[in-house]
Image (cartoon, rainbow, N blue to C red; front, side, top):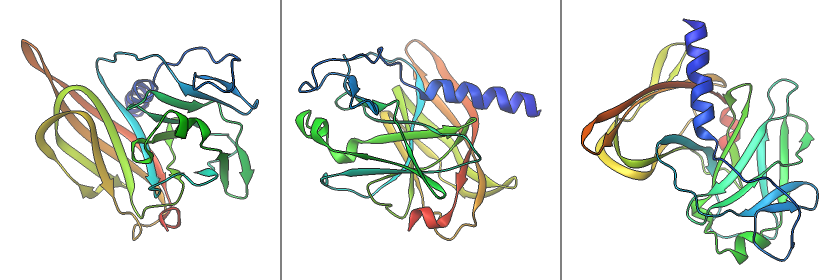
Length: 231
């Protein structure tokens, strides 16, 4: 059972990563996806057509406009440095391969929003994922909003008959969506009164297929939570 759950988690993690082009040097004045300041890869990638279904964000985001420095905060888990990606599917913007700074119990990254402003990437379209050993960690984009956003992308219409959050195998939150939609599907959870620890998301999604039966996704993944991260 444990090995099956691990394979499911790894499969989900592979789906959540958008393929990126090789990050090479280039004109720093352009908005192209290149290596910048030797601490990140950032920019706009050529449009990619994705067919399928994936988790694209687990974050708390409290910005309506870009400050002089956009701060990303990621909790630490063990001795490993998390893998982090910030993106906007609206403009095909990607920020990854970050050189993170460790400060007590968190990692951080500060970014001048020059490329975001040049490419006209709206703050409310930013999505972020971070993980350590297939455990997701919430990314704070700017300021915490008091809730987490779980954002899925589906290339065709899908409904979620099951979306639930569990702790110690007990459901603490559920929010089914039986109205089918395509594009980004957002679930929010206010965990400010929930105890710190490891939680599990279980969801069932049914994605419509042209000329066939819906494709069913029955998946689980784990994430780390602390109510202080939402305050």
